[in-house]
Image 1 (spheres, one colour):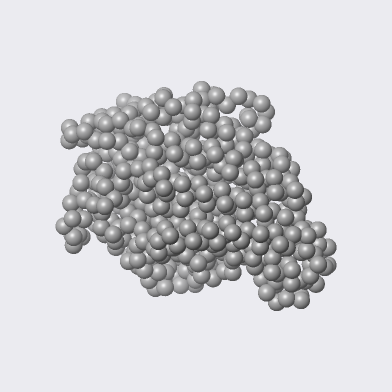
Image 2 (spheres, rainbow, N blue to C red):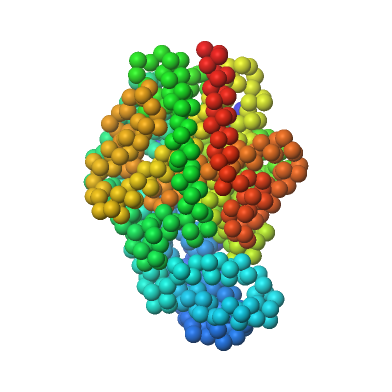
Length: 615
């Protein structure tokens, strides 16, 4: 497709060529977020902020009274809901503004203020759950039957009762709430260092011209067929990370210490249980994923040997793992082309879903291009009651960017449908479910591209794409999960997590997963120092479980058609109205069974057999 706007075409070509990043004002508004959907101006944000700041005493006015009457309990929950909705909007606006330019001190200031206000309000409301737990169960049931609106909260109350062993008294809950800004410092500092303060070098580009490295350009370069260029970028990108290994190591340790503090304070056995139990996810699912993948590393080892053979390499290195074996089928995609492909690929989900995606594209829910000091990577902002979600991209034009668009739109629509269909108490979903909607979209996109491949080589290229997805989302994230569990365990046993220890531990896992065909560079050992998800505490395993679940869901949608698509849309609408395991079962996938994981392994082996026969 030829882009309609000449300026946009020039911008796309400029980004693809490795020139200086465009300034934000040089990009058309239609490719930038419309933050006015949250607040029409900064002044309105300030007005809402002042309102909350001046009315905090409304929350504490119910303290000590929740067990007196159903009316007190209901009015307290509605007041907490009012404050939660306003806080969500304030936080969303501040976060998005900050992420567009991490050197914008005014935006950073607003973000810091709302984080602090959020912590203070959490402190003031910290009595609510302990007081609910003090109400006898039969009396609580009477309250629920007295006011119809309280019936909405039944699952909410059940979950509170389940968490009773890990809920503290009012004073201790208040203390934990006060500590939240402190325990969040390691991630905040890591984010600023990684995205704003680290200075990445300039390297010689494929055309001999200098290329200023960034997170986005590093990822893009790993797909280049020019091996010398890949190696230059890889070595240069890790240089400032290794130079700052001590600072990054201190932040990594600080996050584990914060997680340990919260786990011990809430009477959990360890940080893993503390991360999984609140969402009612059995630790066995985490452990079974790691053990199942470790028992099935052979497909990854086969893939490493196959890449080395087809690329005719004496040695396979980490910077060789992304490059395609079929360069003739490698293309560049404009953002407009990417949108069109995604819309067509997701059509099995039905007209309503597609129309909502179009609305998101047409109404500036997506911020598309990389600009100086913009946050790296990609994300969807998640659920914010009363406001649509936003998607951040850093478009470089690779096929991977098309998959990233489909991925983040999956998150986006999950959030949209959840907020549209659930009352406030359930208008969110657990991180266990979060990655399923995104990777289901990726699976549908890959199927669409393979069905529309123009020749056998393009089909092989797309077969390779599935294998790459499996490597990065299934095996890599499980490797991260195993690393995370090991280093948290070492910390609990008193082992000093020095940068050298972390690097050796990560390097050993990397070698185990890739097998003997891989020659690991020293730089790869420092990957632990640049992964933001390690600061989310046992988040990454859900990419792998989500990948397995989404493959099963996408298969059923494509094979069964409308009935499976409708089940899937109900999954998107469910929010947290049930426990995650049950919501996923309703959609047709049981993650207590090893079958979804084994199905990925079987599919990989089938596709590897096909490529091996070709060569």
